[in-house]
Length: 164
Image 1 (cartoon, rainbow, N blue to C red):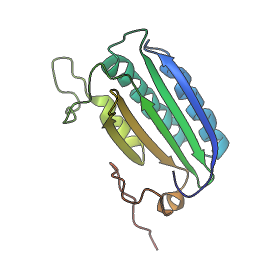
Image 2: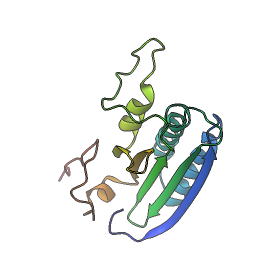
Image 3: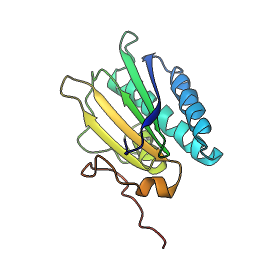
Image 4: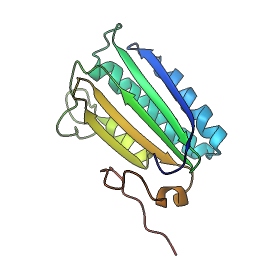
């Protein structure tokens, strides 16, 4: 998180059953709306959260109903909303992202959409097993420019330079 103090943190546990991703999607939208995000940004957020949860259910947990998906939503006063989606990792994340539309079933769009819709994205395997996707979306470009406690953290989308 940025230097802003967290104002809201919500943790959700979902069973690995498709359809339950809607709960995380709706919770993320409610927090983003309260923070003042635009409808377009909320739509992007909802799509990314749903894709991350569906990937965790289908691929990470192999739709094993007893395996859970954990979603942690943390909002900061600085205008940053962080979403972490973690599975129990029956299948580890691939070393290389699949090309969207590749393979027999033309899959691979989920990770692509997540990376395109969010401001920062990190995919990782957890030491204790499981996979994690950390996504960050900023209320404004100014919030994205704020100094971060994690200044050395890798991100899929670096901050854009200021137009000034």
